[in-house]
Image (cartoon, rainbow, N blue to C red; front, side, top):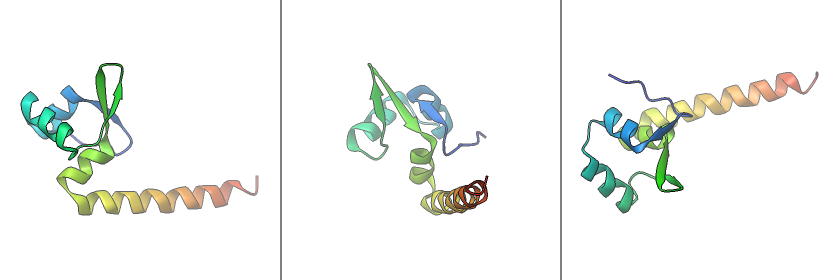
Length: 81
């Protein structure tokens, strides 16, 4: 089982491996907009955040909330430097 990191960038092949889906299914998900991706040259790049939101919206929201809390605390702590 692969761990999906929210801030990691995945190729379509890596995303297929993590999601355990075929190439044609990946193309369908990209075309339908269920997975949002950025096209760089002729290749797509997918954020781990998008994969998490597809698989488990609740887990994705929880991870985002925790990240935002840590970010705010870090900014507050470094403002006094």
